[in-house]
Image (tube, rainbow, N blue to C red; front, side, top):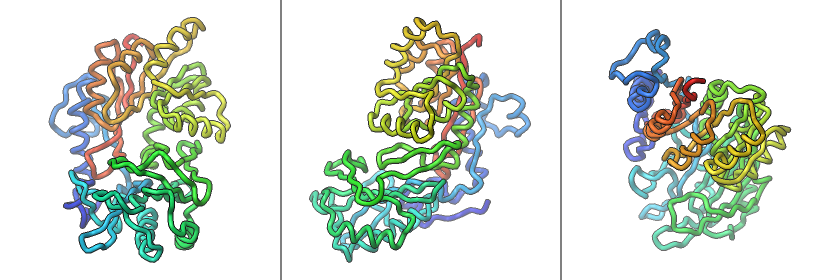
Length: 406
C-alpha cells in the first residue's frame, strides 16, 4: 500500500502514524499489544517479528487484523468551530495538547460525505448570520457540528451543537442544507451552554426529520440518536462483534450477560444464538434505545436493565441458584478505556461465568484486568486485535477467558 501524506498531520496529531507503510505500522502495533497481553496467553513476549506459521502454530500471539483501505473510515465526524484573529471562520479538530483549532477542510480518516456537509455548513454561516461561539467571553451560538453517516443506508444525521436553542432562520437554513445534501435525513440542535470540554449537551431539539438514523451490524438494525454510542468504524466493528460471538461459543441454553451494553449491539446479536440474554447499562437513555432496537428487530429473548453491571451480577447470582440454572454462563464486557473497576471484577468472579469475552481499546488496562482475573481462576485462551482506528496508537482487542477446568 502506497504512503499517503497528510498536510495537517504535524499540527493535528490525531493520526500520529499516517504516512507510514501500513504493513510496518501494523507490525509495530502488534508488538505493542503483545508486549502487554502476550504473557497472559502463556508465553512471555519476545521482541522479534515471528513468522505467520509460527504464530499460527503456537496460538500464543495476538495478531492485528488490518483494513483493506485504512482511509475515510470514521462514520462519525465532529468539527469544532471558531474564528481566527482576523475574524475568519475556521472548523476542524483541536491541536494535540491544546484547545487551538486546526482548520481542516478534508481529513484522510473521516468519511468524505461528512466532511463535505461540514464544509458547506461552514460556507453558509455568513449569509445566515450565524455567530460562532467564543469560549473566552461566552457569547455566540455555534460551537460544533457533528455528522453521523449510516454505512448501510447512506443517510446522514447532522447535529448542530449550539449555546442557545434560538437558531436564526432555522427552517431556511435546513432547507438550503438539505438541497445541497439530499442524503441528510435529520437535523438536530444539541444545546450545550456549559463551559466544558464535552462536545454534546444533555438536550436535543429535532428541527428536521425524525432525530434518528438507522444502521446495520451483523444483520441487525440499530436506531442511532445524537447521544448513542456506536463505534465509528462500522467495517471493523462488524468483524469485532462476529469474533466476540464466535469466541463465546453460545448455545440455546447459555445465559448471556452483556455488561456495558449501550444501545444493545452485542446483546441483540448474541440473542440470535442464545435464548436468554440480559444487557446491563448505566445510561438510562441508552437502555431506552436498546429496548427500541429489540422491538424493531423483533427480538424477544433479550431484556435490558438500567444499573451497575457489577451489582446486577452479584444480585442475580442468588436468583440463578434458586432457579437451579444448569446451562453455561457467558459475560461480554466492553468497558471504557480506563478498564473495569475492582468492584466490577470482584462481582464478575462471584458471578462465576464459564467464559468471559473481553473487548478493549486499551491493552494496558486490559492487561491489568487480566492480572486480576488470572489470579481468580481464569485463563486467557485466545486473542485477536483489530485496527479499529488506523494510523493511531489505538486498536480494539477481543480476548476469550475461560474458567480453569472448563
